[in-house]
Amino acid sequence: MEIISLQSGSSGNCIFVRSGDTKILFDAGISGSNAQSRLAQFGYEIRDCNALILSHEHSDHICGAGVFHRKFGLPVYANLRTWNATRAKPSTGCIGAPNYFVTGRPFQIGSLRIETYRTPHDAIEGVCFVIEDIESGRRFGLLTDLGHVFDGLSKLLSTLDAVLIESNYDPTMLHDGPYPQHLKNRIAGKKGHISNDESAELLDGCDASQLQWACLGHLSGQNNSPEVALETHRNRLAERLSLFCADRDCAVQLPIIEAPKFALKQEVHRART
Image (cartoon, rainbow, N blue to C red; front, side, top):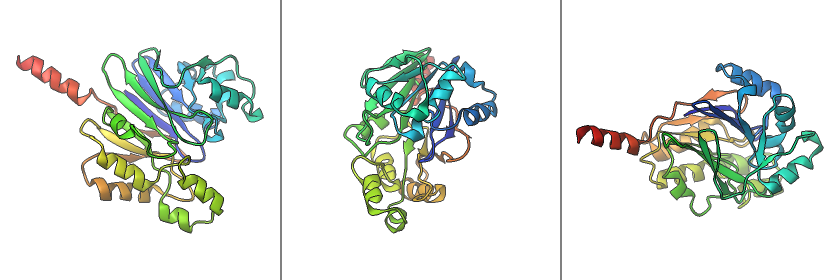
C-alpha cells in the first residue's frame, strides 16, 4: 500500500492512497492544479483516481472538491450531512450527485475497504478513516481533525500497520501565540484538535507492535513546527517507532506499507510446518 501526503496542515489537506489498481484521494483542501502536479511528481495522473472521499466540510478539506469532480471526473463520496454542508458553500461550485456512505459502516472501492469513525471535531459529522487492502490485510489509519482523544482511539491504533495522525499544535506555542483567546480555546477544546503531547501520549500508550511507522499531520503553521512535533514524539517514544512529518506546502511520499507483521508470522509458520 502506497501513501502520499499531497499536503497536510491547517492550510489544506489531501492524501493519496493506492493499492494495486485502486487509487483514492482523501479530502480536497488544495487546488486542482496543485493536486495534479504533485501527483505527477510520482508518476500518477489524477484522472486515474477512482474516488475522492471527504472527511468533513471545513474549507481546508473541501475547497478543491468541485474542481476535482468537474475537471478531473472524480466521483465524490461523503456522508449525507457532510455533503449537504459542502454543497451549501458557494466556493465549492457545482458537484454532481455524490456517493453516500453511512458513518460507522464500512464500504468498498476496488480493492480497498474504507472504515469510517465519527470524530468529536467541530464539524457537522466529521469522520476519520481506516483504509484496508482486502487482499493483503494492510491497514492504514488517516486520523486527523479528531477533536480530542476519544474512547476507542487507542484500541483502533493497535489494529493499524501505519498511521497519519494529527499533531496540530504545541501547547506552549499556542498559549503564547497571537491568536485571540476564543480561537485558542477552540483549538485546545474538546471539539478542536489534538496537540503534539496528546498524539505522542496516544502512540506511547497503545499497543504499537504492529505499526511500521507514524506520520505526524495537520500541523498548525502558527502554533507548531515539524521540528517541535518530531522532538515531542521522539522524547516520548525514543527509537521505538519510525516517525515522519507531513508537509504543509508540498507532497511527501511515505514508506510503502508492507504485509502486516502478523501475516508475515503466519507465512513463516506455514513454511516451517
